[in-house]
Image (tube, rainbow, N blue to C red; front, top):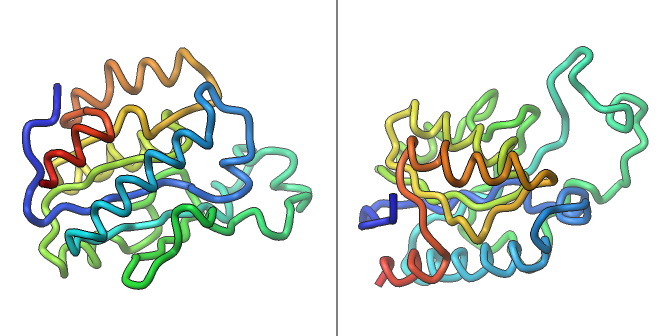
Length: 184
């Protein structure tokens, strides 16, 4: 469903805009996704609306972690947010250990304290961090909007299913330009 409106108390959530994730292989050029996310972040900041920058520093315990994570072979700057996105003064930082930004973290309390009613989502990877965060936001009662040109994945099929099938069931979808226009 095309985005129709943005609540006056909306927030932008950018999922995993960090060096290790942005530097990986993606269906769409990560630089383009980051550029669109930066346009949205600047527009939200200009309106005095919160921007949440989410980064992952771990994974679920057990056999679900990848070999590199288990062995400790991670670059030391892997969790740094790319400079195009911030952080900027006033941004909310969330460090997660699971796929979604709401599990084991506390953005819901932070957002409720600001009377946020709608989340706009961007980030990498569409089917993992972004979709998990969208599902949790929906379950927490937020209106959900996904910026379809500001998300990407490692697999074209899973990306397509999230964008075409899952996100429209959770809320609305639209482009960066259309969302910026809705911001006024």
